[in-house]
Amino acid sequence: MCGLVGLYQKKGESLQRIFDGLIQVQHRGQDAGGICTLQGNKINTHKELGLISEIFRNIDINILKGNIGIGHVRYPTAGTDNVNEAQPFHTTNPINIALAHNGTLTNSKEIKTKLTKLNFCQFNTNSDSEVLLKLLSYELFKTNKNEFSNKDILDVLKRIFDQCQGGYAVVALISGIGLVAFRDPNGIRPLALGKNHNGSYLFASESSAITSLGFEVLKDVKPGEAIIINLDGSIEERHLLKDMQHTPCLFEYVYFSRPDSTIDSISVHKSRLRMGDYLGEKIATQYSHLNIDVVIPIPDTSRTAAMQVAHRLGKKYREGFMKNRYIGRTFIMPGQITRKKSIEQKLNPIEIEFQSKNVLLVDDSIVRGNTSRKIVQMVRNNGAKKVFFASASPPVRYQNIYGIDMPATRELIANNKSIEEIRNHIGADELIYQDLEDLILSAKRGNPSIIEFEDSVFTGKYRTGNITNEYLDELERSRCDKERIVV
Image 1 (spheres, one colour):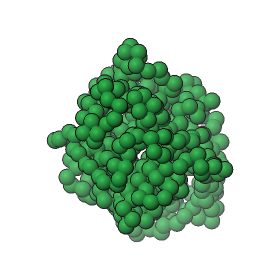
Image 2 (cartoon, rainbow, N blue to C red):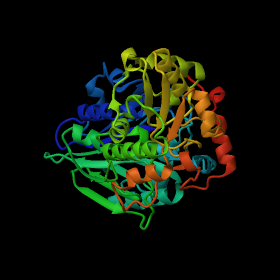
Image 3 (spheres, helix red, strand yellow):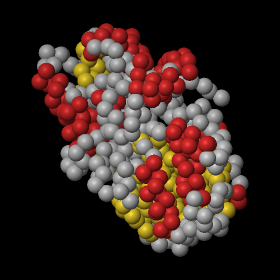
């Protein structure tokens, strides 16, 4: 999972606002980050491993001059945890182009093989984002032009859509053109556009980054749409593909996106409120025998749903954990030892909220089960009489292939265990999962025009791309703990 920012600054330098925007999407990637700016026809780049505040702590602002720029933060979704994999990527062939990408191309291997056989370019990373950049540069190269019009760019992007499979949201700098953004034909990965009173434009993965910087949200980039912000600030929007089925990622609403974001006209906050309503109703009707004293969220994402669960049940809502905000998201971390250490340091219980009580813990999801098991034990050690566990999403049974670095399928606790076996594994007295139909309704009620969501982590139904067993097996091997490489 990654976070994107793309800025056209009407006046002045773009660096500070891009930096501020990346801070607002830092939750989407804490592994690496970078910024590219367009200065005349020159592209300036700086990227490193780490948090944005660390990467740009001592940066010389003179090396990132330009009123147009893009920025990126990443979790590793492919390749190694190496600074060479950090984005944005940059090429000079046939002109200066920089590109940042959120998502996964499921056919990147085939595209890479094709470009390699053509002897068009060399690849320096294992990233599918570099593949996307080189494909874009190749399609421009094929035109035999040194200067390009908007029509040229849009024609090339149409060919990109025809060739690329998977989920992707992209911001790019193209010398002589300006700032370009486009979104995959199914709209799996999010991307929004904002504008301020000075005539500046801002693209971001989430609307919260746009509003936090004082911009007004204009729209979500539509599936199969490309938008060009020209060097003079004029804008051109084009739907390159029509009649596409919009299937945004359902897990964005469950976990990744900030609650103050609106994605595809769906308020993340309201969707999580509805998750809590549906989950609370299920507990009230099917688990009314549970003598619950208090409802406690596992921070942070589950707070909204947990409050609604408590409201529906008529039970007390309490904060029971202090969270260390400097520990990353544990299910993404490579290695069981690393994850266990992080879990132990991440949450610390408030003992009086658990003593002699029957506690209902609410979390957004259960992935490997390591965090859940540790937390249940922690709650028991702090005096709880009984510990019930509720998940605001259904069982996560399958790996994600569209840009979320989920564990290998065989490392997902729900892949090969029944709910009762999962309950025993995490040590809870009862385990309740949200029904998939209710989770879908939680999001769908915000935008009834969306018929289906990309919900493959729950169903194993992959919405786009020719997803073969061979592809899934190869991805499985690369995601197993023993295969993960940290450089």
